[in-house]
Amino acid sequence: MLKIIYWILVIPLLLHSLYFGITALFAFKKNPNKIKKHDPKYKFSIIVASRNEENVIANLVSSLKKQDYPSDLYTIYVVPNNCTDDTEKVAYEAGAKIIECHEKVSSKGEVLKYAFRYLMENDDADAYIIFDADNVVHPSFLSRMNDTLIEGYEVAQGFRDSKNPADNWLCGSYSLYYWGQNMFFSKARMAMGGSASINGTGFMVKRSVLEEDGFNTKTMTEDIEFTALCALHDRRIAFVEDAITYDEHPYKFTVSWKQRSRWSIGTFQCLFGYSAKLFVKALREKSLASFDMSLFFLFPLLQVLGTFLFIAFLVYRIASSTLNKLISSLLTFDIWFLLISYLLCILMAIFVVKYNKKEVKNVFSGIVAFPIFMITWIPINLICMFKRKIVWEPVKHERNIAIDHLMK
Image (cartoon, rainbow, N blue to C red):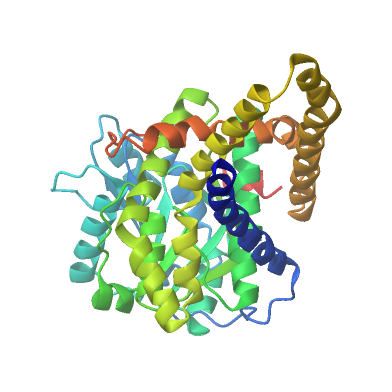
């Protein structure tokens, strides 16, 4: 009976992994939906929600002012909120316009909702682009988003690159995580004819989408929630691989723990709020985007379940084996299995680095520690299964790196 229950629980885990493993292979397929280049046409409003970002905001604004796109076709808006520093002053002096937030906001999603509402009443932009204050942006970003709109897409996600991959093992692991997500999820979905995922920063949404659907996110992870809403409204999200945003990653584990806890809680909120609707739509309308997101929201839950099943398997082996047999088995099979799994993970990480034309030496510590980085998500997800609310805390950004340095 216990074996039957065990396999009933294991089979969904295997099918879930198999699905994302197979779809990841489409990253190597030639993309039939390649976005062509066009002349400048659309007008953009750039929105930057900022909370105590005086150290980095000027470099973002500077990189945006260096875009190879007509300056009269875009405006940079910074939305300071809950600030206790000189973010507003530094942003204004760098050349951004300021949107004063007159409402109490407790998440980035609420700030964006306020900014969208303000700009739709006071600005005539065709589309909105969202960045985080710690970003710097490749000069061709706006041009490629203009091309994407002309090709008929209404929502798009750019390539999320790293500003500081070589700082330490944690920054390197974050960089690998996003490079892999760009490649094996968003790029693969473009090749499949599916929908990419909004990834926090460096994304665009057309004005008409907000006029028709609004921006009604409620969770701590407005990016993946908005992805789910796009799937429910049949809005296909383009992945624009050469529209690059350089993001700053945390170099302190305590900061990473808080950040990933927020992500985990937000994913659980989306799981309970949207997965059933997405799965029903996927079945009724054969919506690949809805099916994708319904399974995506299961990741933290299935990771915790998989960990418990692994522990249960070990307990069963210990209880049903003599000490000598157990030690012999661990030495001859389990240790080798773990070692081979670790080496395969390292090889995959090296492949992702090389595929993205990065230097292995710059992220070597991140490559070596990447399996550990992923394992640390297990206790985070376990705790967040039972924790529904979290205080929105700013991630302190200090890496004052200009776009000119990254472009060398």
